[in-house]
Length: 281
Image 1 (cartoon, rainbow, N blue to C red):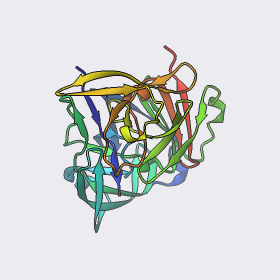
Image 2 (image 1 turned 90 degrees about the vertical axis):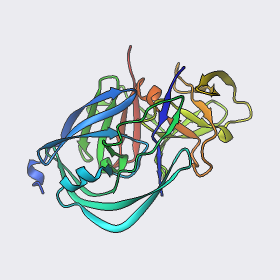
Image 3 (image 1 turned 180 degrees about the vertical axis):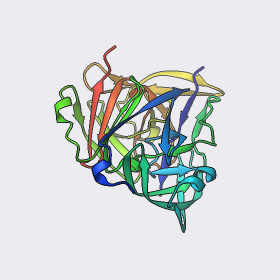
Image 4 (image 1 turned 120 degrees about the vertical axis):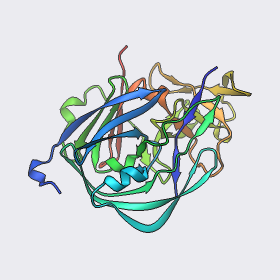
């Protein structure tokens, strides 16, 4: 019996002459969830790397107290997970953050309120570990590379075209729900949210085309859940679970660990471009 977890969340100073243009941070995959250690203000802090969370930072109260310049806005931010559970969290801003010599500016975050959809007894990440979402990198170029267990960050203006020969550009957009990859099965296009912290890809049952084929069904605890099959690039197929996801979730599904384990992913967030490089086994 497989276990799965989806952590998608729908969200309703250094002188530049000395700033680094590139840093590489190891990724540790535990139970198919990516963790990184980041050195902030000379202290190493663990984070979950969650591309399904759009908000820059979800900090525990303890970590929030440590961040220089963090100021609460007096507002609360509402969010909803795939199970339809609503949450409210205190909002804050961080004018500038130094990460290993690279500068991140004008960040917005919230106090962490753990979320997730759990099926088959899956366990989520430690609720005492903060989360980094994709807007943290909105002015950068990043490479999320599960096969080599690294997160590489470049300044947004850094030219890396000399190393792009093996990369394939794919349709991509940024929506209110997250960072969206468009995948087709040859008959219909599906808008799928990129979710590094989901242990498996998922498809919203109401989004399935009338000709979509159910590949197989499996037992997840007390319920039986089926998979469909989507063609993706040459000789690659995505097999998402078919689930009754919350109606407020407007995308067609999410791509999770099974996708990120097969590809290196490059997100040029400043120029809103998305590339993949198949992992050579």
